[in-house]
Image (cartoon, rainbow, N blue to C red; front, top):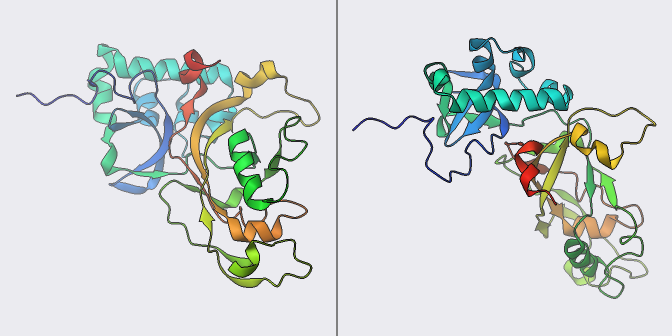
Length: 277
């Protein structure tokens, strides 16, 4: 019985031609050589090698060791590259060239797909904001008065973003002992120092900004597609006991900045166009 080609995916595969997320990987024979890849089924296409083999005009950004050059190239390049990748994977004329450049997913190591220069964490879900407010303000209003009127957010620590799967070390910091946690507004609470006893996670969606904006020049809503490269899943780890002690009055600091797990795959915005409302 002939072996199935990795280019022939079963119907309904979630990583078929409609998806094509980008990532950065290393192959077992070259563990120090990071390459841009696109997931297709249960394989990873080395798009830098594919670009070189097909004399692609986008060989330079696709041959980088991070997604940053491609992300900075802008929407026309993103669309052209996506069309190229789709053609490589679906046109039978490319099969003999592309098939050897597909690596089985279990054999590669995945890395942080891009270098994070800065990020903001937005309090975008009313359900989440309400639940968190009940934790920190059990005797007050769950939602702060400004939540319904403006996007509440804070800056995070870019250097602590890790690729998904990286082990997380329970952070240490100041927090109130359990007997005092229920009364954080006591006149003179005495904190203790030690590992967080209330480590929590927040499953979120990250919007990855590619093309930069100009300082002092606002980006209109119509410019969304010109700047946002794609989306990926994110786990915003939270040390709730440390956060509860430090967040008044300025917001999260050590309780939120010790680690943030980012998915290894970035789904291009164009893959979600049909689902946008």
